[in-house]
Image (cartoon, rainbow, N blue to C red; front, side, top):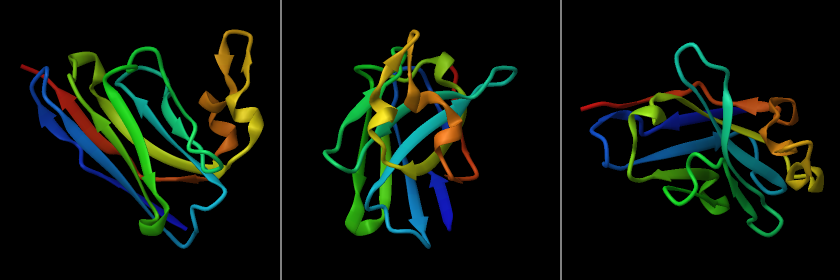
Length: 133
C-alpha cells in the first residue's frame, strides 16, 4: 500500500494550493482519509478528515472555512483544497488512511478521536507547504 501526497509548494499569504493523495494497493472503500500537518518544532496535528460511509467531514478550528477536503473513490484519490493560506499553515502535510469507524467522529475531553494518529494504518510521505511573503 502506498499513499503519495503531492501538490505542495511555496506561496504568498492569501493564495491557494490543492494537495492530492493518491492511494495504490488499497481500495478506499470503507476507509477514512485524514490530512495531518507538522510545522517545524511542533507536534503533528490533524487538519481534516473525510469518511467513506456518508462523506462526513471535520476540520481543525484553525482551517475551518479555508480548507476543503474531498475524495474520489473511483480514482482512489483524496484532496485538500487550501485557500486564504496563512504563514502559520506552513508545514509538511501528510495524508493517512484508516478504517472508517464511528468512533472517529466522537468528541471526548475536548477533542475528536480522529485527530489521534493511532487510528491510521497507512501514511504518505508528506508534501511541504510554505506560506511566506
